[in-house]
Amino acid sequence: MPIKIPSDLPAYDVLTREGVMVMSEDQAARQDIRPIKIALLNLMPKKIQTEIQFSRLIGATPLQIELTLIRMTDHETRNTASEHMEEFYRPFAEVEASDEKFDGLIITGAPIEHLEYEAVTYWDELTRVFQWTQTHVHSTFGVCWGGMAMIHHFHGVPKHLLDAKLFGVFPLQNLDRTSPYLRGFSDACTIPVSRWTEIRQSEVDAVPYLKTLLADPLTGPCLVEDPGHRALYIFNHFEYDSDTLKQEYDRDVSEGTPIEVPVNYYPENDPAKPPTNRWRSHAHLLYGNWINQIYQTTPYDLASIGT
Image (cartoon, rainbow, N blue to C red; front, side):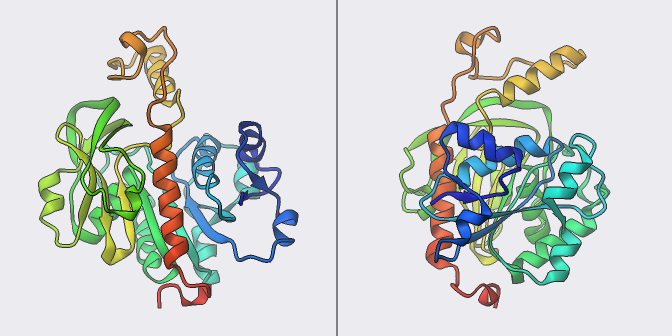
């Protein structure tokens, strides 16, 4: 089954050209099936790029997915047209007031790693989101800064500033081959990393019931399961396009910002050569496994979620 998104959302045309199955609301209404309701709380400045990246992954499963786009209520977005935000996004305050429930929620990263959590302008509302997930969302997926913020909120696990940006494509070790979220995973895989902060394995291990599923000694924990809060936290970027790290690198070079060539990304470490995507298959596996796990465990009656 395809992902159900508005036919005038930019992701619709992009994903259709890529061969991802998408469905308009009219088409979906003709199917006698309850779609899996997934919300995306998009904290990234490039909203459309992020919408496409996550729609691509959650739309590749054999289930019908209904996607809802959510934004912070009073946070101004400068990199995306206001018309786009007005047409396609719902402020969290509206969603909260509606008492609507979701099978899944993805909370993206945000380029605010240098700030203390409490200094983020929308931190108070975001903590309301975290608490709301416990009664209104069956499974939550926190990505990069979003995952760091969640694990800090629920467990007090801190983030630590690095001396240099961790930037490139790095190896990961599969630490639990029996996990339903890692079904089909190799013993080792790679993932794009782009961050100035880290979560330390020792501090994750100090919290009972948190389980690290993917990690590497150099880059630390990557994917952590939090069964008590029905959540996954991933601190790196399976959702990245082939050229996302290139865009970041080219931007910094053009602005004169000191930046190293992303590690293990360009062939022969040469930025003049097109990068090779070595993480796409595991990205689809992870998000497909997450959707499947939601389907296997979520109540048919949405009203029963969180009860």
